[in-house]
Image (cartoon, rainbow, N blue to C red; front, side):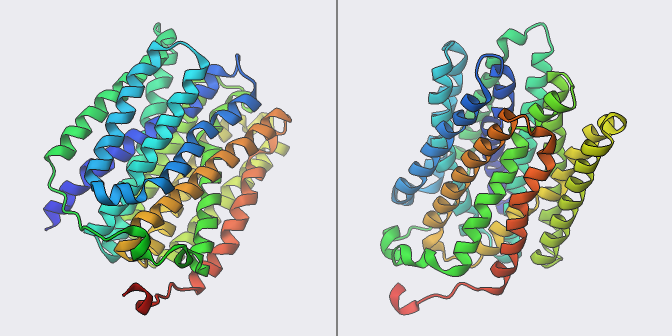
Length: 399
Protein backbone atom coordinates (compact mmCIF):
# COMPACT_ATOMS: atom_id res chain seq x y z
CA UNK A 1 0.00 0.00 0.00
CA UNK A 2 2.85 2.36 0.85
CA UNK A 3 4.38 1.73 -2.59
CA UNK A 4 1.18 2.81 -4.28
CA UNK A 5 1.03 5.93 -2.13
CA UNK A 6 4.59 6.83 -3.01
CA UNK A 7 3.72 6.42 -6.69
CA UNK A 8 0.82 8.81 -6.16
CA UNK A 9 3.05 11.37 -4.41
CA UNK A 10 5.70 11.65 -7.13
CA UNK A 11 3.57 13.18 -9.97
CA UNK A 12 1.84 15.43 -7.42
CA UNK A 13 5.20 16.69 -6.18
CA UNK A 14 6.38 17.29 -9.76
CA UNK A 15 3.15 19.21 -10.49
CA UNK A 16 3.77 21.55 -7.55
CA UNK A 17 7.42 21.94 -8.56
CA UNK A 18 6.39 23.04 -12.06
CA UNK A 19 3.78 25.53 -10.88
CA UNK A 20 6.19 26.79 -8.24
CA UNK A 21 8.72 27.62 -10.96
CA UNK A 22 6.06 29.52 -12.91
CA UNK A 23 4.50 31.37 -9.99
CA UNK A 24 7.84 32.35 -8.47
CA UNK A 25 9.40 33.56 -11.68
CA UNK A 26 7.96 36.93 -10.61
CA UNK A 27 11.25 37.74 -8.87
CA UNK A 28 13.05 37.27 -12.20
CA UNK A 29 10.43 39.25 -14.12
CA UNK A 30 10.55 42.13 -11.62
CA UNK A 31 14.34 42.31 -11.88
CA UNK A 32 14.32 42.16 -15.68
CA UNK A 33 11.52 44.68 -16.22
CA UNK A 34 12.25 47.12 -13.36
CA UNK A 35 14.22 49.37 -15.72
CA UNK A 36 11.26 49.57 -18.11
CA UNK A 37 8.27 49.49 -15.75
CA UNK A 38 7.76 51.31 -12.41
CA UNK A 39 7.47 49.38 -9.14
CA UNK A 40 3.80 50.38 -9.00
CA UNK A 41 3.26 48.81 -12.41
CA UNK A 42 5.11 45.66 -11.39
CA UNK A 43 3.09 45.44 -8.16
CA UNK A 44 -0.15 45.42 -10.18
CA UNK A 45 1.27 42.76 -12.52
CA UNK A 46 0.85 40.14 -9.77
CA UNK A 47 -2.92 40.75 -9.83
CA UNK A 48 -3.18 39.37 -13.36
CA UNK A 49 -2.17 36.02 -11.89
CA UNK A 50 -4.06 36.15 -8.62
CA UNK A 51 -7.49 37.48 -9.65
CA UNK A 52 -8.12 34.82 -12.35
CA UNK A 53 -6.80 32.22 -9.89
CA UNK A 54 -9.36 33.28 -7.28
CA UNK A 55 -12.29 33.49 -9.69
CA UNK A 56 -11.61 30.19 -11.47
CA UNK A 57 -11.05 28.33 -8.20
CA UNK A 58 -14.67 29.07 -7.24
CA UNK A 59 -16.18 28.43 -10.69
CA UNK A 60 -14.39 25.15 -11.40
CA UNK A 61 -15.27 23.22 -8.22
CA UNK A 62 -18.14 21.20 -9.68
CA UNK A 63 -16.33 20.81 -13.01
CA UNK A 64 -13.34 19.19 -11.29
CA UNK A 65 -15.67 16.90 -9.30
CA UNK A 66 -17.32 15.71 -12.52
CA UNK A 67 -14.18 15.55 -14.67
CA UNK A 68 -11.98 13.90 -12.04
CA UNK A 69 -8.97 15.25 -10.19
CA UNK A 70 -6.42 13.53 -12.42
CA UNK A 71 -7.99 14.78 -15.68
CA UNK A 72 -8.25 18.34 -14.30
CA UNK A 73 -4.58 18.27 -13.30
CA UNK A 74 -3.53 17.02 -16.75
CA UNK A 75 -5.59 19.78 -18.40
CA UNK A 76 -3.91 22.43 -16.20
CA UNK A 77 -0.44 21.15 -17.14
CA UNK A 78 -1.19 21.16 -20.88
CA UNK A 79 -2.69 24.65 -20.51
CA UNK A 80 0.47 26.14 -18.98
CA UNK A 81 2.78 24.13 -21.23
CA UNK A 82 1.35 25.77 -24.36
CA UNK A 83 1.46 29.27 -22.84
CA UNK A 84 5.09 28.82 -21.68
CA UNK A 85 6.12 27.80 -25.20
CA UNK A 86 4.45 30.95 -26.56
CA UNK A 87 5.93 33.39 -23.99
CA UNK A 88 9.38 33.90 -25.60
CA UNK A 89 7.82 34.18 -29.05
CA UNK A 90 5.70 37.24 -28.17
CA UNK A 91 8.00 40.17 -27.38
CA UNK A 92 5.50 42.47 -25.63
CA UNK A 93 4.80 43.44 -22.02
CA UNK A 94 1.05 42.89 -22.39
CA UNK A 95 1.61 39.18 -23.05
CA UNK A 96 3.14 38.82 -19.57
CA UNK A 97 -0.30 39.78 -18.22
CA UNK A 98 -2.03 37.13 -20.34
CA UNK A 99 0.62 34.54 -19.47
CA UNK A 100 0.31 35.23 -15.74
CA UNK A 101 -3.49 34.91 -16.03
CA UNK A 102 -3.06 31.49 -17.64
CA UNK A 103 -0.61 30.43 -14.93
CA UNK A 104 -3.10 31.57 -12.27
CA UNK A 105 -5.97 29.60 -13.83
CA UNK A 106 -3.75 26.52 -14.22
CA UNK A 107 -2.59 26.65 -10.61
CA UNK A 108 -6.16 27.00 -9.34
CA UNK A 109 -7.10 23.77 -11.13
CA UNK A 110 -3.88 22.04 -10.05
CA UNK A 111 -4.06 22.95 -6.37
CA UNK A 112 -7.68 21.83 -5.96
CA UNK A 113 -6.91 18.58 -7.80
CA UNK A 114 -3.69 17.80 -5.90
CA UNK A 115 -5.13 18.46 -2.44
CA UNK A 116 -8.25 16.47 -3.28
CA UNK A 117 -6.14 13.50 -4.39
CA UNK A 118 -4.19 13.73 -1.12
CA UNK A 119 -7.41 13.91 0.90
CA UNK A 120 -8.79 10.83 -0.88
CA UNK A 121 -5.65 8.74 -0.39
CA UNK A 122 -4.12 9.74 2.95
CA UNK A 123 -5.40 10.12 6.51
CA UNK A 124 -4.42 11.83 9.75
CA UNK A 125 -0.64 12.22 10.23
CA UNK A 126 0.04 10.54 6.87
CA UNK A 127 -2.04 13.29 5.27
CA UNK A 128 -0.01 15.94 7.10
CA UNK A 129 3.19 14.27 5.91
CA UNK A 130 1.93 14.13 2.29
CA UNK A 131 0.94 17.82 2.36
CA UNK A 132 4.38 18.77 3.68
CA UNK A 133 6.11 16.62 1.02
CA UNK A 134 4.13 18.22 -1.82
CA UNK A 135 4.68 21.69 -0.40
CA UNK A 136 8.41 20.89 -0.04
CA UNK A 137 8.57 20.29 -3.80
CA UNK A 138 6.99 23.73 -4.23
CA UNK A 139 9.96 25.20 -2.37
CA UNK A 140 12.56 23.32 -4.38
CA UNK A 141 10.85 24.67 -7.52
CA UNK A 142 11.64 28.19 -6.31
CA UNK A 143 15.27 27.14 -5.81
CA UNK A 144 15.54 25.72 -9.34
CA UNK A 145 13.90 28.69 -11.06
CA UNK A 146 16.19 31.22 -9.37
CA UNK A 147 19.36 29.17 -9.87
CA UNK A 148 18.44 28.46 -13.49
CA UNK A 149 17.46 31.99 -14.48
CA UNK A 150 20.27 33.47 -12.40
CA UNK A 151 22.82 31.41 -14.34
CA UNK A 152 21.16 32.29 -17.64
CA UNK A 153 21.15 36.02 -16.88
CA UNK A 154 24.90 36.02 -16.19
CA UNK A 155 25.76 34.01 -19.30
CA UNK A 156 26.41 35.14 -22.88
CA UNK A 157 22.80 34.27 -23.67
CA UNK A 158 21.15 36.61 -21.15
CA UNK A 159 18.97 38.20 -23.83
CA UNK A 160 17.30 34.82 -24.36
CA UNK A 161 16.23 34.50 -20.70
CA UNK A 162 12.55 34.01 -21.64
CA UNK A 163 13.42 30.77 -23.43
CA UNK A 164 14.10 29.31 -19.99
CA UNK A 165 10.34 28.75 -19.78
CA UNK A 166 10.66 26.10 -22.50
CA UNK A 167 12.43 23.88 -19.94
CA UNK A 168 9.35 24.19 -17.72
CA UNK A 169 7.17 23.27 -20.71
CA UNK A 170 9.21 20.08 -21.22
CA UNK A 171 8.81 19.17 -17.53
CA UNK A 172 5.06 19.71 -17.90
CA UNK A 173 4.90 17.22 -20.77
CA UNK A 174 6.84 14.65 -18.72
CA UNK A 175 4.44 15.17 -15.82
CA UNK A 176 1.42 14.68 -18.10
CA UNK A 177 2.83 11.34 -19.25
CA UNK A 178 3.46 10.29 -15.63
CA UNK A 179 -0.10 11.17 -14.64
CA UNK A 180 -1.61 9.36 -17.64
CA UNK A 181 0.24 6.18 -16.64
CA UNK A 182 -0.54 6.45 -12.93
CA UNK A 183 -3.36 4.57 -11.23
CA UNK A 184 -4.94 7.16 -8.98
CA UNK A 185 -8.18 6.01 -7.43
CA UNK A 186 -10.83 8.70 -7.15
CA UNK A 187 -14.04 8.72 -5.19
CA UNK A 188 -17.06 10.09 -6.97
CA UNK A 189 -19.17 12.52 -5.00
CA UNK A 190 -22.61 13.97 -5.62
CA UNK A 191 -23.00 17.62 -6.52
CA UNK A 192 -20.53 19.59 -4.38
CA UNK A 193 -22.94 22.33 -3.35
CA UNK A 194 -25.57 19.83 -2.23
CA UNK A 195 -23.05 17.67 -0.37
CA UNK A 196 -21.48 20.57 1.46
CA UNK A 197 -24.78 21.95 2.71
CA UNK A 198 -24.12 25.33 1.10
CA UNK A 199 -21.69 28.04 2.07
CA UNK A 200 -22.86 28.19 5.71
CA UNK A 201 -20.44 25.41 6.64
CA UNK A 202 -17.47 27.63 5.78
CA UNK A 203 -18.64 30.34 8.19
CA UNK A 204 -17.64 28.20 11.17
CA UNK A 205 -15.21 30.10 13.45
CA UNK A 206 -12.30 27.67 13.01
CA UNK A 207 -12.52 27.95 9.23
CA UNK A 208 -12.77 31.75 9.33
CA UNK A 209 -9.62 31.92 11.49
CA UNK A 210 -7.92 29.49 9.13
CA UNK A 211 -8.76 31.44 5.96
CA UNK A 212 -7.49 34.68 7.51
CA UNK A 213 -4.26 32.90 8.46
CA UNK A 214 -3.93 31.59 4.88
CA UNK A 215 -4.35 35.14 3.56
CA UNK A 216 -1.57 36.54 5.74
CA UNK A 217 0.62 33.45 5.35
CA UNK A 218 0.75 33.89 1.56
CA UNK A 219 1.01 37.65 2.09
CA UNK A 220 4.28 37.05 3.98
CA UNK A 221 5.60 34.35 1.63
CA UNK A 222 4.97 36.59 -1.38
CA UNK A 223 6.83 39.43 0.32
CA UNK A 224 9.86 37.16 0.43
CA UNK A 225 9.60 35.15 -2.78
CA UNK A 226 8.93 38.03 -5.20
CA UNK A 227 10.62 40.97 -3.47
CA UNK A 228 13.66 39.61 -1.65
CA UNK A 229 15.83 39.85 -4.83
CA UNK A 230 14.89 43.53 -5.18
CA UNK A 231 15.71 44.12 -1.50
CA UNK A 232 19.12 42.50 -1.97
CA UNK A 233 19.81 44.54 -5.10
CA UNK A 234 18.54 47.90 -3.82
CA UNK A 235 19.55 47.76 -0.16
CA UNK A 236 22.45 45.31 0.06
CA UNK A 237 23.80 46.42 -3.34
CA UNK A 238 24.49 43.00 -4.87
CA UNK A 239 24.22 42.30 -8.60
CA UNK A 240 21.20 40.65 -10.26
CA UNK A 241 22.71 37.17 -10.14
CA UNK A 242 23.33 37.20 -6.38
CA UNK A 243 20.00 38.94 -5.82
CA UNK A 244 18.25 35.98 -7.45
CA UNK A 245 20.36 33.55 -5.43
CA UNK A 246 18.91 35.11 -2.28
CA UNK A 247 15.52 33.69 -3.29
CA UNK A 248 17.16 30.46 -4.40
CA UNK A 249 18.73 29.87 -0.99
CA UNK A 250 15.57 31.04 0.78
CA UNK A 251 13.78 28.33 -1.23
CA UNK A 252 16.47 25.75 -0.45
CA UNK A 253 16.11 26.37 3.29
CA UNK A 254 12.33 26.33 2.82
CA UNK A 255 12.56 22.94 1.13
CA UNK A 256 14.63 21.60 4.03
CA UNK A 257 12.09 23.03 6.49
CA UNK A 258 9.12 21.40 4.78
CA UNK A 259 10.95 18.13 4.21
CA UNK A 260 11.84 17.98 7.91
CA UNK A 261 8.23 18.87 8.78
CA UNK A 262 6.93 15.91 6.74
CA UNK A 263 8.91 13.67 9.12
CA UNK A 264 8.59 15.58 12.41
CA UNK A 265 4.81 16.00 12.14
CA UNK A 266 4.51 12.22 12.55
CA UNK A 267 6.07 12.55 16.02
CA UNK A 268 5.23 16.01 17.39
CA UNK A 269 2.03 17.98 17.93
CA UNK A 270 1.50 20.53 15.13
CA UNK A 271 0.89 23.52 17.46
CA UNK A 272 4.24 23.15 19.24
CA UNK A 273 5.99 23.09 15.88
CA UNK A 274 4.09 26.23 14.76
CA UNK A 275 5.11 28.25 17.83
CA UNK A 276 8.76 27.18 17.60
CA UNK A 277 8.84 28.21 13.92
CA UNK A 278 7.11 31.56 14.55
CA UNK A 279 9.50 32.38 17.41
CA UNK A 280 12.52 31.68 15.21
CA UNK A 281 11.13 33.78 12.31
CA UNK A 282 10.53 36.75 14.64
CA UNK A 283 14.01 36.33 16.10
CA UNK A 284 15.77 36.33 12.70
CA UNK A 285 13.68 39.27 11.42
CA UNK A 286 14.45 41.24 14.59
CA UNK A 287 18.19 40.56 14.34
CA UNK A 288 18.13 41.50 10.64
CA UNK A 289 16.36 44.81 11.28
CA UNK A 290 18.82 45.74 14.05
CA UNK A 291 21.78 44.95 11.78
CA UNK A 292 20.30 46.99 8.91
CA UNK A 293 19.46 49.99 11.11
CA UNK A 294 22.50 50.08 13.41
CA UNK A 295 25.37 48.12 11.89
CA UNK A 296 24.71 48.25 8.15
CA UNK A 297 28.30 48.71 6.88
CA UNK A 298 29.71 45.99 9.13
CA UNK A 299 26.90 43.48 8.63
CA UNK A 300 25.87 43.84 4.97
CA UNK A 301 27.73 40.68 4.00
CA UNK A 302 26.31 38.81 7.02
CA UNK A 303 22.73 39.79 6.12
CA UNK A 304 23.07 38.10 2.73
CA UNK A 305 23.39 34.80 4.60
CA UNK A 306 21.10 35.42 7.59
CA UNK A 307 17.86 36.42 5.84
CA UNK A 308 17.46 33.30 3.61
CA UNK A 309 17.69 31.08 6.76
CA UNK A 310 14.19 32.36 7.62
CA UNK A 311 12.87 29.89 5.02
CA UNK A 312 13.83 26.98 7.30
CA UNK A 313 11.27 28.15 9.89
CA UNK A 314 8.73 30.05 7.77
CA UNK A 315 8.06 27.24 5.27
CA UNK A 316 6.64 24.63 7.71
CA UNK A 317 3.83 26.96 8.81
CA UNK A 318 1.61 26.79 5.72
CA UNK A 319 1.47 22.95 5.45
CA UNK A 320 1.01 22.63 9.23
CA UNK A 321 -2.04 24.91 9.22
CA UNK A 322 -3.37 23.29 6.02
CA UNK A 323 -3.11 19.70 7.22
CA UNK A 324 -4.58 20.50 10.66
CA UNK A 325 -7.81 21.83 9.12
CA UNK A 326 -7.91 19.59 6.03
CA UNK A 327 -7.96 16.54 8.31
CA UNK A 328 -11.20 17.85 9.87
CA UNK A 329 -13.01 18.56 6.57
CA UNK A 330 -15.04 15.73 4.99
CA UNK A 331 -14.09 14.40 1.55
CA UNK A 332 -17.29 15.78 0.03
CA UNK A 333 -16.28 19.30 1.02
CA UNK A 334 -12.65 19.08 -0.06
CA UNK A 335 -12.98 20.64 -3.54
CA UNK A 336 -14.81 23.72 -2.29
CA UNK A 337 -12.56 23.97 0.79
CA UNK A 338 -9.38 23.98 -1.31
CA UNK A 339 -10.92 26.46 -3.76
CA UNK A 340 -11.43 28.87 -0.86
CA UNK A 341 -7.80 28.34 0.16
CA UNK A 342 -6.83 29.33 -3.39
CA UNK A 343 -9.03 32.45 -3.19
CA UNK A 344 -7.46 33.54 0.12
CA UNK A 345 -3.99 32.71 -1.20
CA UNK A 346 -4.60 34.77 -4.34
CA UNK A 347 -5.81 37.76 -2.38
CA UNK A 348 -2.88 37.45 0.02
CA UNK A 349 -0.44 37.27 -2.88
CA UNK A 350 -1.86 40.33 -4.65
CA UNK A 351 -2.17 42.47 -1.51
CA UNK A 352 1.28 41.36 -0.34
CA UNK A 353 2.85 42.35 -3.64
CA UNK A 354 1.10 45.73 -3.63
CA UNK A 355 2.16 46.22 0.00
CA UNK A 356 5.80 45.63 -0.88
CA UNK A 357 5.54 47.69 -4.09
CA UNK A 358 4.39 50.70 -2.05
CA UNK A 359 7.22 50.19 0.46
CA UNK A 360 9.83 50.08 -2.30
CA UNK A 361 8.21 53.01 -4.15
CA UNK A 362 8.33 55.11 -0.96
CA UNK A 363 12.02 54.18 -0.47
CA UNK A 364 11.18 52.52 2.86
CA UNK A 365 12.68 49.14 2.00
CA UNK A 366 15.38 49.57 4.66
CA UNK A 367 12.59 48.52 7.08
CA UNK A 368 11.81 45.41 5.02
CA UNK A 369 12.08 42.93 7.98
CA UNK A 370 9.93 45.17 10.20
CA UNK A 371 7.13 45.45 7.64
CA UNK A 372 7.09 41.66 7.19
CA UNK A 373 6.80 41.17 10.97
CA UNK A 374 3.44 42.99 11.13
CA UNK A 375 1.28 40.36 9.32
CA UNK A 376 3.17 37.61 11.19
CA UNK A 377 1.93 39.11 14.48
CA UNK A 378 -1.65 38.70 13.24
CA UNK A 379 -0.94 35.05 12.35
CA UNK A 380 0.53 34.47 15.81
CA UNK A 381 -2.58 35.84 17.53
CA UNK A 382 -5.06 33.93 15.36
CA UNK A 383 -3.23 30.65 15.97
CA UNK A 384 -4.51 30.59 19.58
CA UNK A 385 -8.11 30.94 18.39
CA UNK A 386 -7.61 28.31 15.67
CA UNK A 387 -6.36 25.77 18.20
CA UNK A 388 -9.19 26.37 20.69
CA UNK A 389 -12.03 25.84 18.18
CA UNK A 390 -13.18 22.69 16.39
CA UNK A 391 -15.29 21.99 13.30
CA UNK A 392 -18.69 20.57 14.20
CA UNK A 393 -20.97 18.91 11.67
CA UNK A 394 -24.73 18.99 11.35
CA UNK A 395 -25.16 15.34 10.40
CA UNK A 396 -28.90 15.72 9.84
CA UNK A 397 -28.21 18.39 7.24
CA UNK A 398 -25.68 16.15 5.49
CA UNK A 399 -28.16 13.37 5.16
